[in-house]
Length: 156
Image 1 (cartoon, one colour):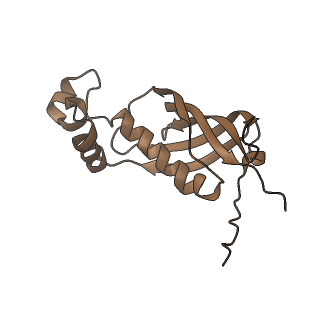
Image 2 (tube, rainbow, N blue to C red):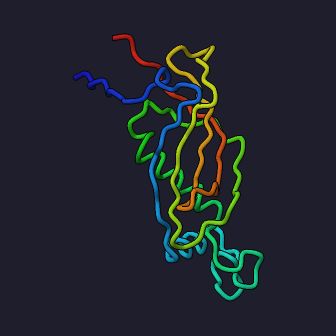
Image 3 (cartoon, rainbow, N blue to C red):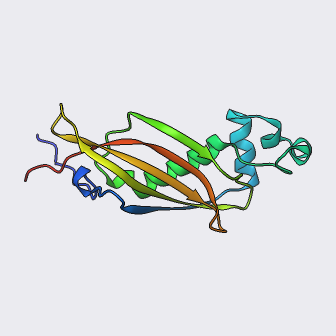
């Protein structure tokens, strides 16, 4: 029995250079910051309130990797699950610009910076993107520049 063809909202051809796609918001809790840091980045300014208070941050902050993970979750939940995504060949740059703290709400968007069809595989293309996360005050807290591979719209 043939499998049904999945229809996606977003294919390679739908990515337009300069297009900004909002992908949602997330409010981070102290418990989430602590749990992530304990598991993956247990530096004192992420897990120890006393040490964090004495640090250059003046208090506990989320790991930059936690910020990236929250950004990724928003991307999957609110964009990639509806896209003909084939994964990513890599990330070129991550910047943690401003600390994320408990109670902060980050709002994430992605912008297509460049698109190019694959020269060797005509069923796909590569989209260069910049993800941006801003906090509840509109301050930029993180950026991620990378690439995503997307299937081209099937000829139907």
